[in-house]
Length: 133
Image (tube, rainbow, N blue to C red; front, top):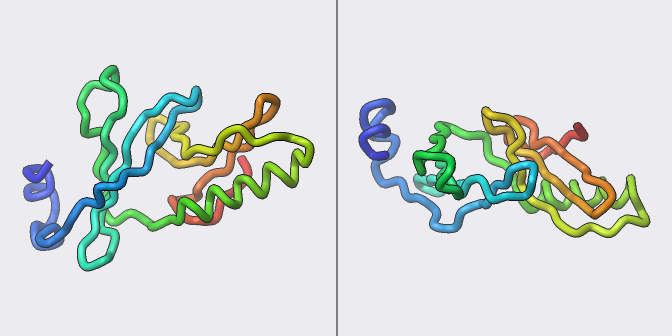
């Protein structure tokens, strides 16, 4: 990975950067773990995200390096997804809420599910304002 960083991007941007060891787990539409998303910080600023495959059938472990990503607040997005699900289905029981990748080119969405329904909210441009889809 460092070879990629050093040849494709400005090296000074990565000097002194660190990878947060706590990853965000991203799932596919069937609920299978798809990626571990690691955030890269320099001087407390998010400079990159790195997706590592969570399944050996995906091939290469390094799936994606996102440069200058837009920050998003996972807790806030999940909270909004749950609120939307409860408003639309007040008698429903939420059984799971996960960050989900739906497209081949990853776009994050939230899946809040119960056995009868599934609410999907898009994390628009990795922002913290989910939209119903």
